[in-house]
Image 1 (cartoon, one colour):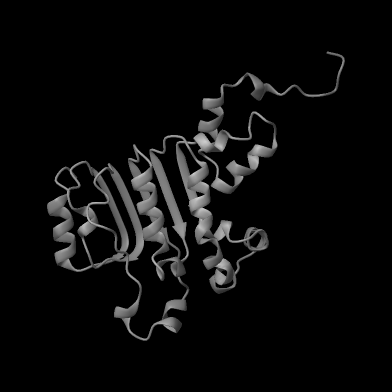
Image 2: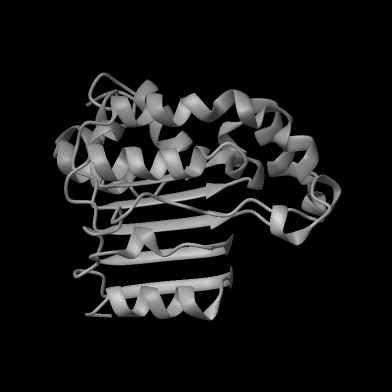
Length: 213
């Protein structure tokens, strides 16, 4: 062509293929891809998988520090509460099907029920969500400074039957004291519980409701 400019081969790639590629990126990076060109601007809105990493979404400075060296959790959680609404804004601007959804969050998001609220918002406003993954970051001993008694540690509670549409569910590092969310889970085939604190009666109730595990 008589030019040193490298041709943009992505112009020939269909938009749905590019959106699929973006599903393999962390959400913040997928959104940043919108600055590449007009074609890329809204591609993240149609991704079929979203992974929300609260630690990365807190603020750019925290993200920069985390990428360079270990930063104590308490240094990163200072602005966590300010960003609860950011999740709703992201989901509001995402308008494609969402078969798969993952949240990796800080433990303080359990205090005011933010995690429960995010999950229920997604499951109630998005059709076709089949796979859900939830993981709470380890607290590095912070909970012991906040709560004198073990029973006071925040627990994960959802509304009755909220998991009915799921085919796969993963939960890591939680205290669970209620099985209401699993009522009517006739489609749930895969359930992964890791580092979960719950009573025998709760696990028995879960198994009784999930008849096709």
